[in-house]
Image (cartoon, rainbow, N blue to C red):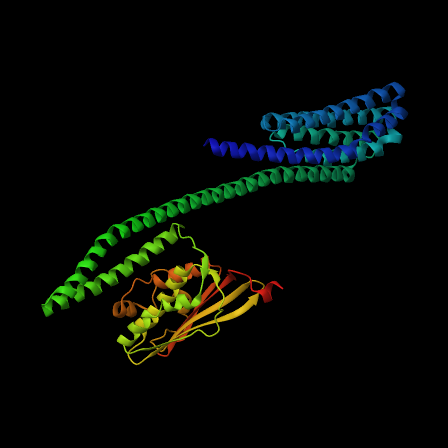
Length: 460
């Protein structure tokens, strides 16, 4: 309730400032009124009367101006209800001053100044509609005073008849309509500002809620990542023991069944360890704890370490070739371990989805050279199951595979490609895939690498 009250008070102050700015503009226009009042009164009532009315008008306008300046200066502390009451009083005083002066003109020289008095009274009637005060009486008094001057002046000049009376009533009605319109406009403006402020408040509240929810989600994600990283470490330790002892049993046991079962345990352990490693790596990425270990790299050594995939391909009767002729012979600055991890993931995927008798080709080439930087492209193509059109963009999202049947048939967590994508992005590169269902697929990535030592032909 307090917030609503404060909001309404803020709008009242805003409307009051708008009205004051309008009055300040009108003041520049009315600054000639006291002089016109003095000149007219001078001819009708003499010098002393002219000076008296001149200084009265000056004092009233100056006092009103000072009051408006004071309200603007202390707008955050003033009582808006009281200000509107004061505005009404000042307005009535101004209209009364000029109306009484008009009566003096008519009484002093009814023949010469009756038209001036009528026009002046009409202008005062239209001017009184500018005060959108919360009180009706001040506007009513300000409206009737100049109207009485018009009637009095017309009567003194013998111009009051049914036609002129009808015109006077029409003028009174017009001024009353304008006054009512301005009062309605004030309340409409108040309601509109209130609605806009309420909408802004709701928008701010929605933004605050969104920020809080985002903070909660990020915290939950961080806790999840920390939990997964911790659990992966805790599980990987006993898994190493299981793998070690299953390997030992397989090698030293003389019982065929024991060796067979030991082999099953070892294969399952290797699969589980792969999953744990993927979860651990992805959790570190989620927690933004993965950093690149940049060091000089020779590509011959990198691809020698990947030759064990050739043996796995032979075991599955899949032809695996590596075409690496276009790679630089110089040492490059790169994270060898992360490059090996990306390539191993892509080759492992290709091998998993390529049936017996299929073929896998690993290519690497230079895409562009610029000063001491090379942009290298790596591709892993296979003749496996491929994927449908429109699936490529989804493959690099975490826990996503081409369809549910693939997960059931081939297994896997769906993290391998997501990890590759994030590592390539961390290296400042790009990754993508293209393929056709039943016709194989090609996974590629490009990364920029700097020379470990700038070649002479580049530095020259």
